[in-house]
Image 1 (tube, one colour):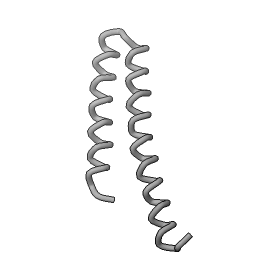
Image 2 (spheres, rainbow, N blue to C red):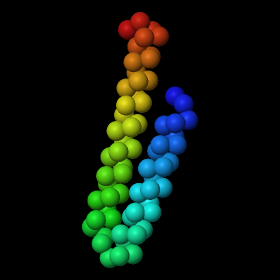
Image 3 (cartoon, rainbow, N blue to C red):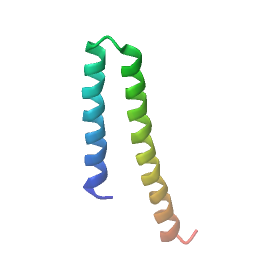
Length: 64
């Protein structure tokens, strides 16, 4: 695992936080919540891919 995945997650988090604040201040709470939910789904898919890669590496190391 390299630092790129952490930077991507941090970038998505910062972007979503800014968009959420802008939408909240504009009175569009439901759109702000949907944006936050979409950001969380994006980050979760990135993490799931990395966990899958980890399991594949463990499987290869232990010849399972």
